Length: 177
Picture 1 (cartoon, rainbow, N blue to C red):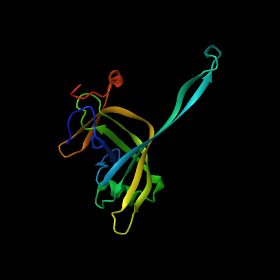
Picture 2: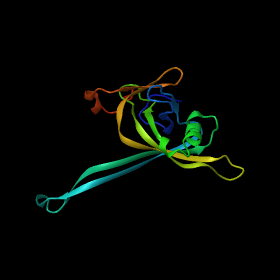
Picture 3: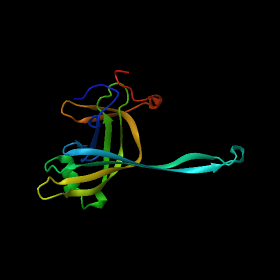
Picture 4: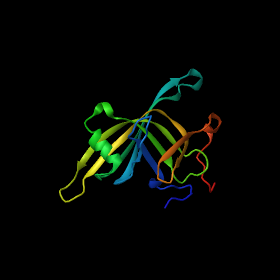
Protein backbone atom coordinates (compact mmCIF):
# COMPACT_ATOMS: atom_id res chain seq x y z
CA UNK A 1 0.00 0.00 0.00
CA UNK A 2 1.53 3.35 -0.98
CA UNK A 3 2.13 5.54 2.02
CA UNK A 4 4.45 8.27 3.14
CA UNK A 5 7.47 6.96 4.96
CA UNK A 6 11.25 7.14 4.77
CA UNK A 7 11.96 3.44 4.18
CA UNK A 8 10.39 2.64 0.80
CA UNK A 9 9.79 -0.81 -0.60
CA UNK A 10 10.98 -1.64 -4.11
CA UNK A 11 7.42 -1.19 -5.42
CA UNK A 12 7.46 2.47 -4.26
CA UNK A 13 10.02 3.28 -6.95
CA UNK A 14 8.07 3.37 -10.19
CA UNK A 15 9.32 3.37 -13.76
CA UNK A 16 7.50 4.52 -16.91
CA UNK A 17 8.61 4.54 -20.55
CA UNK A 18 7.19 6.60 -23.40
CA UNK A 19 6.09 4.25 -26.19
CA UNK A 20 4.58 7.13 -28.17
CA UNK A 21 6.47 10.09 -29.60
CA UNK A 22 7.79 13.26 -28.03
CA UNK A 23 4.89 15.14 -29.65
CA UNK A 24 2.24 12.59 -28.57
CA UNK A 25 3.63 10.71 -25.55
CA UNK A 26 2.11 7.46 -24.35
CA UNK A 27 3.53 6.65 -20.94
CA UNK A 28 3.30 3.02 -19.78
CA UNK A 29 4.47 1.62 -16.48
CA UNK A 30 7.04 -1.12 -16.17
CA UNK A 31 5.43 -3.21 -13.44
CA UNK A 32 3.15 -5.99 -14.70
CA UNK A 33 4.92 -9.34 -14.20
CA UNK A 34 8.07 -7.72 -12.82
CA UNK A 35 9.32 -9.56 -9.73
CA UNK A 36 12.75 -7.98 -9.32
CA UNK A 37 14.55 -4.77 -10.20
CA UNK A 38 18.28 -4.24 -10.16
CA UNK A 39 20.84 -1.55 -10.82
CA UNK A 40 24.26 -1.45 -12.35
CA UNK A 41 26.59 1.45 -11.64
CA UNK A 42 29.99 1.73 -13.28
CA UNK A 43 32.19 4.69 -12.47
CA UNK A 44 35.66 5.52 -13.64
CA UNK A 45 37.96 7.91 -11.90
CA UNK A 46 41.17 9.69 -12.57
CA UNK A 47 43.92 9.62 -9.98
CA UNK A 48 46.37 12.42 -9.21
CA UNK A 49 49.47 11.93 -7.07
CA UNK A 50 50.80 15.22 -5.72
CA UNK A 51 54.08 15.72 -3.93
CA UNK A 52 52.40 17.69 -1.13
CA UNK A 53 50.20 14.66 -0.43
CA UNK A 54 53.31 12.45 -0.18
CA UNK A 55 52.24 10.17 -3.01
CA UNK A 56 48.72 9.57 -1.74
CA UNK A 57 46.12 9.54 -4.50
CA UNK A 58 43.52 12.22 -4.96
CA UNK A 59 40.65 10.68 -6.92
CA UNK A 60 38.13 12.42 -9.13
CA UNK A 61 35.15 10.65 -10.74
CA UNK A 62 35.24 11.19 -14.49
CA UNK A 63 32.58 8.96 -16.09
CA UNK A 64 29.60 6.87 -15.08
CA UNK A 65 27.24 4.37 -16.63
CA UNK A 66 23.92 3.61 -14.90
CA UNK A 67 21.55 0.85 -15.93
CA UNK A 68 18.24 -0.25 -14.46
CA UNK A 69 17.34 -3.91 -14.94
CA UNK A 70 14.00 -5.69 -14.65
CA UNK A 71 13.17 -9.39 -14.48
CA UNK A 72 10.01 -11.38 -13.99
CA UNK A 73 7.38 -13.16 -16.05
CA UNK A 74 6.06 -12.40 -19.53
CA UNK A 75 2.57 -10.90 -19.59
CA UNK A 76 1.18 -10.75 -23.14
CA UNK A 77 -1.10 -7.74 -23.46
CA UNK A 78 0.90 -5.52 -21.10
CA UNK A 79 1.73 -2.40 -23.14
CA UNK A 80 5.28 -2.00 -21.79
CA UNK A 81 6.21 -5.66 -22.30
CA UNK A 82 4.56 -5.88 -25.73
CA UNK A 83 6.45 -2.78 -26.87
CA UNK A 84 9.77 -4.20 -25.68
CA UNK A 85 9.36 -7.85 -26.74
CA UNK A 86 7.26 -7.47 -29.89
CA UNK A 87 7.96 -4.05 -31.41
CA UNK A 88 11.60 -3.51 -30.41
CA UNK A 89 13.16 -6.94 -29.88
CA UNK A 90 14.79 -7.20 -33.31
CA UNK A 91 14.86 -3.48 -34.10
CA UNK A 92 18.20 -2.21 -32.79
CA UNK A 93 17.62 1.17 -34.43
CA UNK A 94 14.48 1.67 -32.32
CA UNK A 95 15.81 1.04 -28.82
CA UNK A 96 15.89 4.64 -27.57
CA UNK A 97 13.15 5.51 -25.06
CA UNK A 98 12.24 8.37 -22.81
CA UNK A 99 11.74 7.31 -19.16
CA UNK A 100 10.52 8.60 -15.81
CA UNK A 101 11.42 7.12 -12.44
CA UNK A 102 10.10 8.33 -9.11
CA UNK A 103 9.16 7.42 -5.56
CA UNK A 104 5.37 7.33 -5.17
CA UNK A 105 5.62 7.80 -1.39
CA UNK A 106 7.49 11.13 -1.54
CA UNK A 107 4.86 13.86 -1.53
CA UNK A 108 6.86 17.02 -0.78
CA UNK A 109 9.49 18.25 -3.16
CA UNK A 110 11.26 16.54 -6.07
CA UNK A 111 10.59 12.80 -6.17
CA UNK A 112 12.15 11.60 -9.42
CA UNK A 113 13.91 11.96 -12.73
CA UNK A 114 13.14 12.08 -16.43
CA UNK A 115 15.63 11.22 -19.13
CA UNK A 116 16.56 9.07 -22.10
CA UNK A 117 17.72 5.49 -22.14
CA UNK A 118 18.50 2.62 -24.48
CA UNK A 119 16.51 -0.58 -24.07
CA UNK A 120 18.58 -3.70 -23.52
CA UNK A 121 17.02 -7.14 -23.70
CA UNK A 122 18.65 -10.12 -21.99
CA UNK A 123 15.80 -12.67 -22.00
CA UNK A 124 12.60 -12.56 -24.08
CA UNK A 125 11.03 -15.62 -22.49
CA UNK A 126 12.63 -18.75 -21.12
CA UNK A 127 12.10 -21.40 -18.47
CA UNK A 128 11.05 -24.96 -17.84
CA UNK A 129 8.09 -26.35 -19.77
CA UNK A 130 5.71 -26.26 -16.81
CA UNK A 131 6.82 -22.79 -15.64
CA UNK A 132 5.88 -19.29 -16.66
CA UNK A 133 8.28 -17.67 -19.10
CA UNK A 134 10.91 -15.49 -17.47
CA UNK A 135 12.04 -12.21 -19.00
CA UNK A 136 14.88 -9.77 -18.49
CA UNK A 137 15.46 -6.30 -19.88
CA UNK A 138 16.98 -3.01 -18.87
CA UNK A 139 17.28 0.71 -19.37
CA UNK A 140 20.81 1.92 -20.00
CA UNK A 141 20.65 5.60 -19.06
CA UNK A 142 21.91 8.04 -21.72
CA UNK A 143 23.25 11.32 -20.38
CA UNK A 144 22.17 12.98 -17.16
CA UNK A 145 18.44 12.76 -16.33
CA UNK A 146 16.57 15.88 -15.25
CA UNK A 147 15.45 16.03 -11.63
CA UNK A 148 11.87 16.96 -10.88
CA UNK A 149 8.48 16.07 -9.52
CA UNK A 150 6.32 13.35 -11.02
CA UNK A 151 2.60 13.35 -10.36
CA UNK A 152 0.06 10.80 -11.52
CA UNK A 153 -3.34 11.72 -12.90
CA UNK A 154 -6.41 9.81 -11.75
CA UNK A 155 -6.02 7.45 -14.73
CA UNK A 156 -2.35 6.79 -13.89
CA UNK A 157 -0.66 9.01 -16.49
CA UNK A 158 2.54 10.63 -15.16
CA UNK A 159 3.35 14.30 -15.53
CA UNK A 160 6.87 15.63 -15.00
CA UNK A 161 7.73 19.09 -13.67
CA UNK A 162 11.41 20.04 -13.68
CA UNK A 163 12.71 21.53 -10.44
CA UNK A 164 13.99 25.07 -10.47
CA UNK A 165 17.78 25.48 -10.37
CA UNK A 166 17.66 26.68 -6.73
CA UNK A 167 15.71 23.59 -5.66
CA UNK A 168 18.08 21.12 -7.36
CA UNK A 169 20.23 20.86 -4.26
CA UNK A 170 17.29 19.81 -2.05
CA UNK A 171 17.21 16.22 -0.86
CA UNK A 172 14.27 13.84 -1.19
CA UNK A 173 11.99 14.71 1.73
CA UNK A 174 9.00 12.71 2.88
CA UNK A 175 5.97 14.18 4.60
CA UNK A 176 7.06 12.48 7.84
CA UNK A 177 10.34 14.27 7.94
